[in-house]
Length: 163
Image 1 (tube, rainbow, N blue to C red):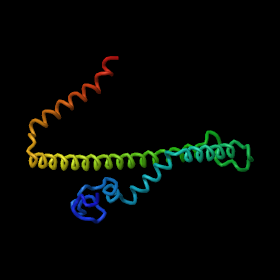
Image 2 (cartoon, rainbow, N blue to C red):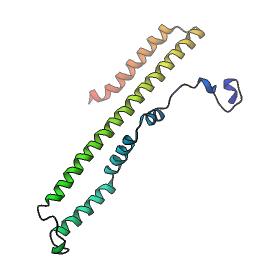
Image 3 (cartoon, helix red, strand yellow):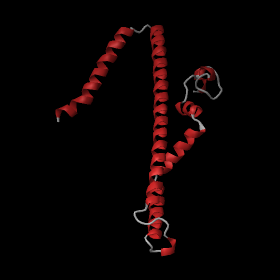
Image 4 (tube, rainbow, N blue to C red):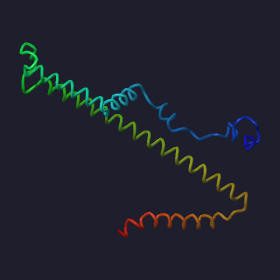
């Protein structure tokens, strides 16, 4: 099977003809340090460890400041104005990091869409050229493709509209 490309080199296709780009590699090349930091922070903020850490932190803060651990340790009396300010600042920063990460996800999706389009276009061009070399009627094939697509779309929407 290795000889499918005419050379016994461990590759099924010639190395220089492989022009399909990897979306993950392309996105990683566009990523800056600040983007990676935002992704790490957002990933941690979306974890249960984040919830547990904050539950423990808020619990300890409240216990200190209602005097259960010792009146001399109170530094933020009820209604916990300092805690409220810290949590508000954290919410501002976390929402910013989430928006940065969402922008990164949108960029990833856009890169994948472009590469998918490029791969589909390549396939279309190759199939057209191969079909022409084999003497296949492209108009007939296109008519068959349209019918198959129509049937597939009808099958997708058929059962849900019948209920």
